[in-house]
Image (cartoon, rainbow, N blue to C red; front, side, top):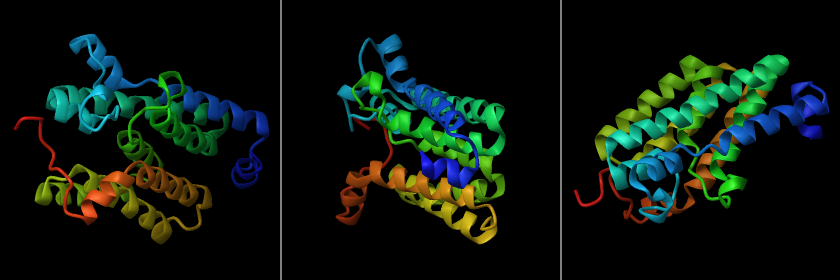
Length: 209
């Protein structure tokens, strides 16, 4: 708590409110909602076991995957806006980050969530649009070449962090936010990184195709 109050310059109660709002929004798992509503199943029982858009694509197809991505992006947007209403830019950073934490480790769903990519992309775009869009475009080019979503996700978040270091170094809270988002995404992709190293990572496609 002292870390956030010191770096972001806001009081402890406001920090707690931003954390709580962000985390609770993150617990809204679009993938689980869509898979239960339309397929009477839980996507976490299939594929990689993650509640994210990539696993939705692999299990149910591109339509459900796109809906999941949009839903996870929307909750990040709401988190950032709510945090900004509470205490400006710093509140948006904190609430946005904890949307990602809540998405990855949702307490109301046994701490089994997604990998935080869609939410992280949205927070990055809202925080530093040019840096985020540049990073995502490069990541998208990587995806087009090798069809490995995990590599795109890792590359884009690392590039976004590097962009903040290069062009936003005077905005220390933003640099910290970008670094924390990158750390979370890399932690959640630990198994993917191992498969990438060993040349075993799957390409993005629906199961059976």
